Image (cartoon, rainbow, N blue to C red; front, side, top):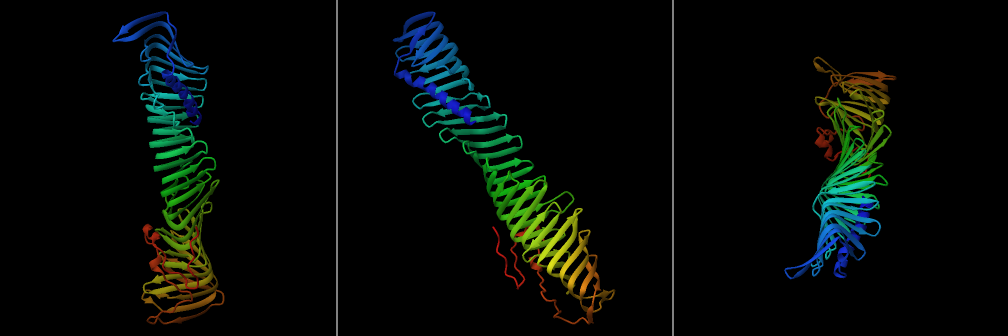
Length: 511
């Protein structure tokens, strides 16, 4: 588009020089087979017929016939109109009107402006000499070897070197197709401004916006008003989108949304930056992630800042600062989140806490693996603590590390490794039978119907069974129960976390 507009700018300038010279030099008759003269309404009128040729300051006009008004230096020409400027410019048409007193020239019919590189076709062109403008209001097409521009209306301001194309603007090339309502091109700055609904199609992307600009020289663009970009299965939306074609860098502001249909994820925020053609991104300011797959429950997650990276078929996601997530069977909070799709592994760091059914789990690090449309296994490393509420009592298990196995998205079996410690309330059909305080090397726990069912001590057991006594109940070291922090709905992930382990200060968000 840059080259086409530049060529048109140059040759329309030549055409204007023809109009502007008219008041400085009379139109010379170079040839006619028949020349007739008469007086009409006090004016001298000349009729030229057959192989008519005029010259005006280096430009030549050919026609089948013409009328020339000498006093006003105006003429009307008919049939096989041809204007030649130098050796390169040629304008064809059926009828030409030129009014010297108004400095206005109009070419009608099958108008064809051509040179070896470009061609303009329309049915009417008007030159306004005093305003240095060229106007057309009929379907027009500008074409060179690489691309074409079509519109129903257009004008050119020669003084400002500014083009305006309106109504059904279409730009075609082998690499892209543009459809817009209005295009304004500033030749001095090599800048195109688009107004109204605009689509840009290429081999692997579709861009839509209703207001925007494109700098051809720097290959930089900005779009707004319902702006969206689709590329390789990914959609990017925003109130304002900025894009650098050379580097693949993009930026979105206001109601930003990134949808990856291939990876089944959606990312939201009010500010985002993308790199490598949307294969890397980060978003912040109300950042939210939705991860979903057919047959699985959608994961809703929010953080101060979300990061994403795709290399080949591997998709990695990270959340930094005030992480909270919700699934119907699983909820959690932490200061750092990472999800690796290649092995369906979720990692939580920074005071992580996890809830499932009536169970709360905390540790220094929590890792959760998913498989077959649900939760598969759970790893708690460092200061691991599991608490499960049973009526008004709390089953408590602590250890250095824990490994859990899920069945039907509920915790089924749990191993506690090293420094295992528990407060367990066994029961029978008549109710709770006591309070068992147990220490051993390792513990294996079995769950049934989402409740702790049996507990087996492995290695050097030391325990005592106490009768149940009224409050206060004994607590294991590090006991913390945070039901108010648990996200119970997708909206709850936006509630700030209220409770932290007292030995650790809340981590600051990472931007």
